[in-house]
Every structure is written in structure tokens, then in C-alpha cells.
Length: 341
Image (cartoon, one colour):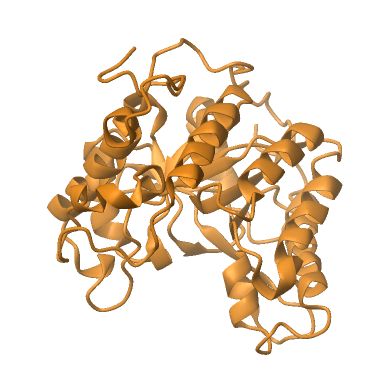
């Protein structure tokens, strides 16, 4: 047991496997990362739904937990957001029942091999939001996100509930910033607190590199069917680039875009495909249906590994540096005549 008993070091994560090194000339696997911003189990019950789907289709995922989702509303004054009034937040806090369900889901997700990352806390965007924070302010935000997870027994009084089965100081190795803002200072703060990656960027389908000492694994620009531009690989961005209300075929458009991005990588440079989502029923849930369809389709294909960010960076860490250097030189969608040796 750790601290007040909210967490416990139970040893290696069940099902964890040591990553293998590519043999000379071997084609890389096609990694696909399904990730979720602000993961929490509210009335939509989408956390539990996609946790079960991941188990069904062989996908381990990354759940970016908002620290406030394990802090009951009655305890909101424990949060001291940088640059904002004590207890302030641009996302709502959960009722006790939802906090309880979220803790249950976090526990079950980790035991099934998924990763628990962070979406930080108050989700402040815009001119007065996280983009204006210094590295020191980000460190304060990260420490609070950890504290809420590590002390939910203190804030809820649920001393009879089982602890989360991991040491969050070791488990937390990366996150995604609110609105993809403030990333340079957030990276500096995260690196100083043991982070290994960041997924807050706006990128393309190329192999990851390190930025500010962290693996940079951003969301990616993918073809938007029927439109003359590419769109960021996240449900919110599809909705923002569609007619108000989504229109007919909004979910299918997102699915076709994700599948187009998948095939561009799978048949090309094999760059990991990064997909971001929210547990939201926007436009009647059509984007959730699209994600489910893509997971069901791609995770069963040969040489595809649907993994968490932790599993991806574990794999990147053990590869020979010159091989990764050669992979990073491959343009979007380009399949080489032969793979690096």
C-alpha cells in the first residue's frame, strides 16, 4: 500500500511483454494507438464500453485521466489551478457515484494492460488558459493530478474500497494537454517529473522523434473524404469540420478518414497511427461508432499492434538508433524498396 492506501504497488502489469528489436531489414509492425482525453466513467458509460471492446479486439489503449474526475465536487477547493481562482475548472466535477465508477474503470483498465496517462485537471484553454503557463505552473498542475489519484481515499472517505493496483509515480509517463495548448512548457515540466512522451502536437504520419527529451507522438493530419484538406485525427476535429449537427454520413466520413490514414501507413512507411477521442456522444454517438468500427477492423489485421503509448515508446526505446533514423526519413505514405538494416 502507498500513502493513504489509495494506490498499491502490485508488481509488473499483467500481460506486460518485453518489446523486441527489429531484425535487419525487417518490416516494422503497424502500431495503432487509441487514446482518450479526460477519461472518466459518467452516465454515458463509454469508458467501460471501450475497455471491453479493447479486450475483445486485442487493443490496449491509453486513457488520459483528468485528475478532477476522481475528486468529488464537494472537495473542489482542494484544487489550486495556476492563474485561476481556487476550485475553478472549465470541466465539471463528478458526482460521488461517477467518481466511484471511474476508479473502478481505472483499476480494471490497468489490470487489462491499458495505460493510465493524464489530461491534467481544469482544462483551461484560450488566452488565459494553459498556453500562458510556465513550466513551474505546469509542474504544480501535474503534481495535483497525481495527488488526486494517489489520495482519493482521503477526499472520498471510501476506506473500504480496493486501492488502484499501481504506483502512479511509476505509471504516469505522459499526457495530452487541453486543446493541445501549452505544450513546450508542459513538456519541460513533464520531463522533470519523469515523463517519457507527449501527445499534444499536430503532426503528420511519420515516425516519432524526440523533442525536449520526450518522445513526440502527436495527433496526425489525415485525409478528409470529400474535402480538399486534411483533418487532425480526433473526434472533436471531425465534428468541427462538418456542418453543424454533423449531417448525414458524419460518422462514416470520420471512419473513412481514419481508415484512409491507416492504409496510407500500413501500405506505406508503417508510421504509428495515433487516434484521439473523447467519451462524448456528439451528434448522437456517430464518432464513437466510427472508432469502434475502426478498432474492430484494423486490430485483427496481420502485423498490426493496437497498443498504448507506453507500449509504443517501450518499443521505440529498444530499437537501434540508426534504424529509427532511417524510418523517420520516410515520407508520408512512402513504402521503401527495402527496410533499414
